[in-house]
Length: 476
Image (cartoon, rainbow, N blue to C red; front, side, top):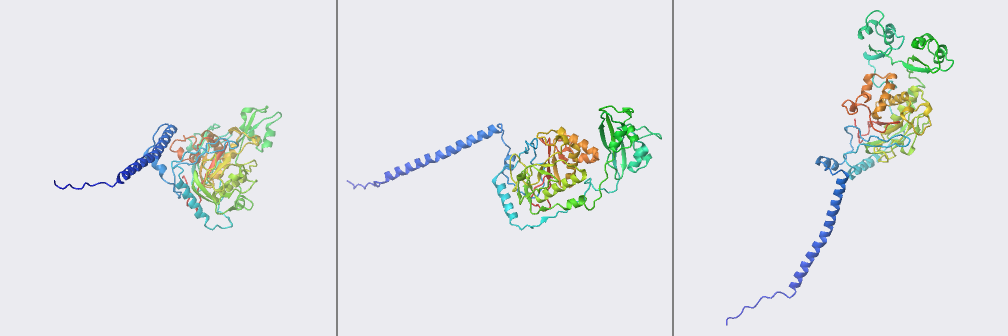
């Protein structure tokens, strides 16, 4: 028999090792599957919740990219207002109903703001208050250049062509030609509007009313209001020769002349404004910070601070606020309260109910009230002194540092009327107020004073970034 070849035998331990190895593979597979299944389950639940919250609509890839992009708080222009208010009454409902930002609230943006804050805090700051060069006091931010411009003259009872020409410093024949008036003594109907082309035209005359009481006469009303008796009678020919109770006696006055800027005048008052240096706004009003926030100084002669712990702003914003209220007090002699609402907290950032007010440039101001409404907790637009309100808003406009003013569109009609009575031209108001243009129109979107829901008894002023605030984001 041929010799048999020896059979190869596997080591006795090899089958056991293979079994152990297979068991480990199975165990690892089971353990790995459980967390993955749990994560997938959570992701699915989150996705369903997101769909339910957003009404099941998918977000576009463009929107997802916008949310993923980090905020770069460098000085740049942004489109449209950010951080607008939709709170109601200043006393109880002051708050922000801002348009939602498209960039999200990611950690990258917060980290970058904190890095900028640390960098700025490391820089030395002058211990002396900032002495800001304020522009000279003017009634209109548009400089007078000596060129004639078209204005509207409203005819009042007793007006003559000669008197109108003399008032505007133009020739009588030109007034007649501009308005197609014929004859030596053309009839001028009260309330009619005439076009006048004049250099530095005077502001419109102010209309006043006196409600007659028992015993009033034309003589007593003329003396009490310091107007010529014969002119008062000419203005009120329809009332007859005697007055009866509750009749309205109307009269007009020329607006008071501007005070010369001299010692003790507006220039001296503005020069007394001292604001601590170093208060810097960074980022956007609706996503920003305030570095070395400046507390609004206690000045009961100028304003009342509603919430001192929310009355911090940048050096630039606080300076412009104080300058505007100083101008308002000086020019009008208004003695009643001017209430300042929320501005920002010491370090800025979000504080409820606001969404803006984060970078020390947003200011809520209650509109001045008529005397009868002083002290009321709940006020309405009928309680507002609209003439004083316009003067206060105009004082901010005159600084040249206002980015936006927010006020409900229906109330802008009242503001428009008060502005016209105070001497503002139609051309100026076309740039400043949205009314009577639609807020959504192209021209309406360019106006300084804009419609935002909730501004019924207070308006919202946003101050521009200061010259040295390179990390501040402006929207204009």
